Image (tube, rainbow, N blue to C red):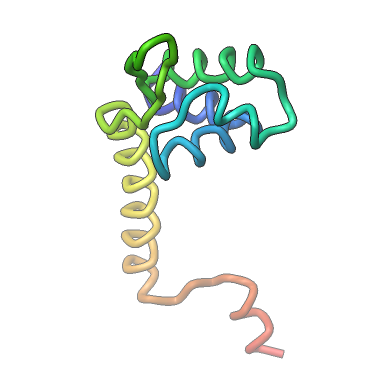
Length: 110
């Protein structure tokens, strides 16, 4: 399985995606994350474990707490994948002569 596929699978869960969105704004502890989510601290810890195994977040210890933050190196394969999709779309658009062929075009012909 490609690294970006692991990242996509990890982010497919709405709770994990929300946790990641919170962590990407600033480093946070499990307790801080759990306080703003409708799940328990153990559930947040499990979700963070999935995100960590997908290399989307890392943690550092601060006393007895673990503080989670994004892992930029882990995001690189996912970013490259999304950018390759965008490149493919732009290439196909250019090859079509700039015509989108989308739903708006069908309405223009009516």
